[in-house]
Every structure is written in C-alpha cells, then in structure tokens.
Length: 183
Image (cartoon, rainbow, N blue to C red; front, side, top):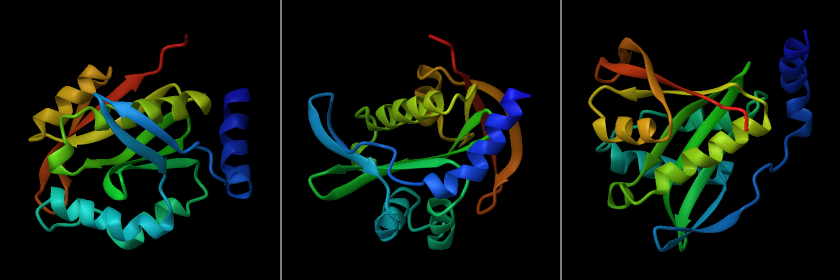
C-alpha cells in the first residue's frame, strides 16, 4: 500500500515541486574536465545537433518529443555534459512506478569511449536511488555492441529482445535492466 501511495504522490505532486533537482557540477573524467547540468528547454536545438552527429543526419527524437519530456509531470531527469561551451552529449530518464527508465543517451562520436556515458549513467542511478526506484531500465539497438558492453559494465543485464523496436530501421532492441541493490 505504501509503495502505491509513494508512486501516486510522486506523480501528483511532481509538477508543483518541479525545480532543478540536480546540482550543476564540474567533473573530471579520465583526466578531462567537463561540466554537467540539468538540460533546459533552451538546449533542445543543441540536443538535436548531437543526434544528427550520431545518427548521420537522422533525428530519433524530435524537438516536440524533447519538449514533452522536459515539461512532463512525470518525475524525470535530463542531464547535459559540456566541454567549455560545447554540448558533448546528454542522458534522459523518467520514473514510472519503481523503475527509472533511461529514455536516451547520446555522446558525440569524438568523445565516445572516454567515460562520459558511464558517468551520466551513474548520475541517473543516483537519481533512481533518491526516488526509491528498484530498477533502472533501457533499450539499446542490437547492433550497438559498444553501448551494450558499457551497460553490462554498469550492472545491466539482458531482459528481452523487442522486435522491430526502432521505427526508422525496423531494428530490434535489447531490453536491459539493472537491479538497484540496497546499500
């Protein structure tokens, strides 16, 4: 009963309590300095530019999709990572029930493999713990072996294959989940 009340109260009260929940911070990742902060509506144009770099001109998420997520009444956290003033990548998540679902994660190709994606995942896991989630979940393209390797390193395991999940290519997705251990 308490679990259902917590879920309901989170959803009902969230729009009224929505303010920045993530303290902006400068971080060192493998010797490089980056700035991580909550994503703002004003960042959407840059988010789309990051997507274009990664997906060769394609836009898996539209401007309206990002706008809907950032203004959602569902508890969520979107983070952007910068070097100087250049947006290098972002991660998004939303909480539904006891699961924190990573909706997207993207790092521009020149900065992939430098630990930035892993750090962003760590920040989302902290957000999930703060919101008493039991799991963190995500989907990843079957062809994206590098991302799958990172997710496994971060404690995610395969749950199922979602056939033809990605509309633009009909590619299957691997559904992955991480059980949050109590510390």
